[in-house]
Length: 113
Image (cartoon, rainbow, N blue to C red; front, side, top):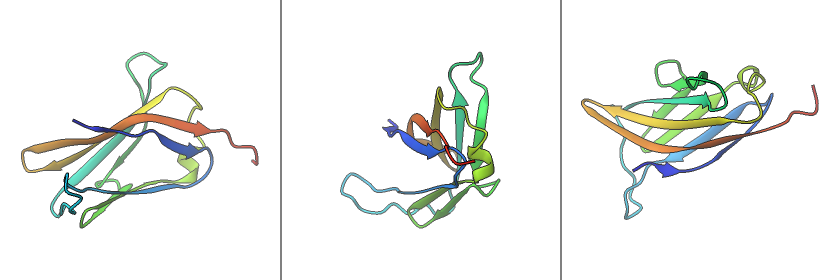
């Protein structure tokens, strides 16, 4: 079952977050050979349209050891609506899919433009 975690993103600012994947005994789980994808989707529009996609393929997710680094450029956070965004993060290795974390995205309004 995916962990629940709400993410806070500042509109118009670069977003970066490092997650560490550990087992129940707090031991690091090596993610060598894994890929990942994360989608942010709007809940207040029909069919949950895509806001932003991060992946190891598009360079917005980097995996090193047990660490997963997420990155969203300021030009992309600038485009986010302030409310109604959900996300989840999936890891892929061979035939295995792990939905690691999910939650709401809280976007704080930018004042300086």
